[in-house]
Length: 278
Image 1 (cartoon, rainbow, N blue to C red):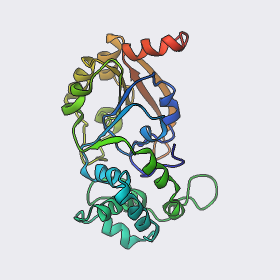
Image 2 (image 1 turned 180 degrees about the vertical axis):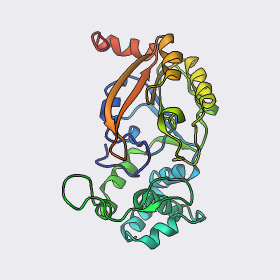
Image 3 (image 1 turned 180 degrees about the horizontal axis):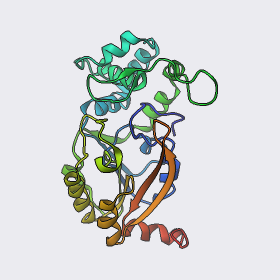
Image 4 (image 1 turned 60 degrees about the vertical axis):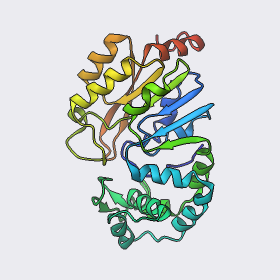
């Protein structure tokens, strides 16, 4: 269990994780198909087998470095003695360095010190945070809090971490007792036009391909998104159940977050809680 995110990451789900986890059925194998900051994985109980996948080499390098006992301590030491400074942030926007630990530090600094996009070479230095005590946080203070890195390093032990596309691994890991948790980049039509990730997935065609894949998976599946006609017409007409929760995005705008659960997932949950979906 982590007490705060290890990365400030677009769509990270740290605060939503307890709600999402309340809909997790019992499972033997867990697959985080679009891993990102791993906020759900890092807050869930361990499964017999666990997999984390993300196409972004920077985020997978960070997770591999933090999850490796030979590099985790040194990464945390470097974070500890790296100041919260504009020069550091500008360094984080430069071309990734070759040393895996410094590359992880570079990516971590970009996530915590930057506003806006996390794509390579973009973003604005996060200076003040909240100074009037009405809410929010002080960015430099968060940067100095190292506890979650130790917590995450311990939790990542035993997790397979790979920079691979979910499309390439899904069918190989599909089993009735496998739970696939998917939090892909959201559909552009409901999210907006901004580019937030190195590997975007804004087009309807890309999401149609993903939905077609998960409809045929032999396993339990939960997928996140904003409510959309595409997801409703594709999933709910095939017996999937949508659950929603009101939240706010990183600009404090009200949003409706949704998760869709496939029929096998719903059936497994109803075995334990028959009234859950009434």
